[in-house]
Image (cartoon, rainbow, N blue to C red):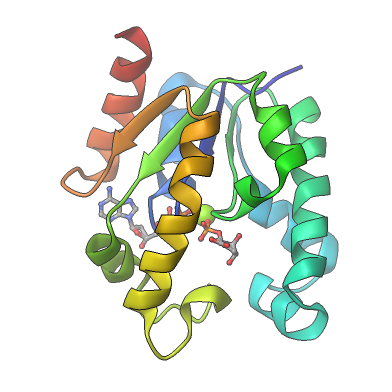
Length: 168
Ligand SMILES: Nc1ncnc2c1ncn2[C@@H]1O[C@H](COP(=O)(O)OP(=O)(O)O)[C@@H](O)[C@H]1O
Ligand SMILES: O=C(O)C1=C[C@@H](OP(=O)(O)O)[C@@H](O)[C@H](O)C1
Ligand SMILES: [Mg+2]
């Protein structure tokens, strides 16, 4: 069993939103690994970071991604930091990976002063977002089959681009 698409990219790129649209468009099930983690932990991501710390979240995330990759056959959305795990990147080489990219300004605009994303709730979200992009772009591109720049597209247009992108 294997997902039709695995979707990666920075926070706010539209992984959750577009994966849901893409799944509906293709008549496939949708799954979001963040939601799996929340269900397992019984608390929101932000509380996991606060109560248990980021390393504990990343360990749960690596395990949840490995599980979803063998269980899910539809469109699978990962969290923005899942590619930080070398084991996860290794696993992703076997799959069709969609990298939804977003620039700093648009990424910050979409995530806002998001309390749901603990990594972006600091005093300078633009600087934090830029540092996150600089560190992770090579990791997203290491695993990407298709890359879509989403800044000037709405979610439906991004969905179209993913489908067309694979046919290109
Ligand atoms: N292409 C887009 N254009 C404008 N807003 C978008 C786009 N994709 C997602 N959004 C909005 O940005 C926010 C974050 O989207 P989300 O799907 O949660 O991103 P991610 O899962 O990558 O963090 C949501 O409010 C969503 O409606
Ligand atoms: O970029 C990150 O490190 C994170 C992104 C979040 O998911 P989204 O990318 O769906 O917001 C969530 O997994 C957590 O807040 C960590
Ligand atoms: Mg998401």
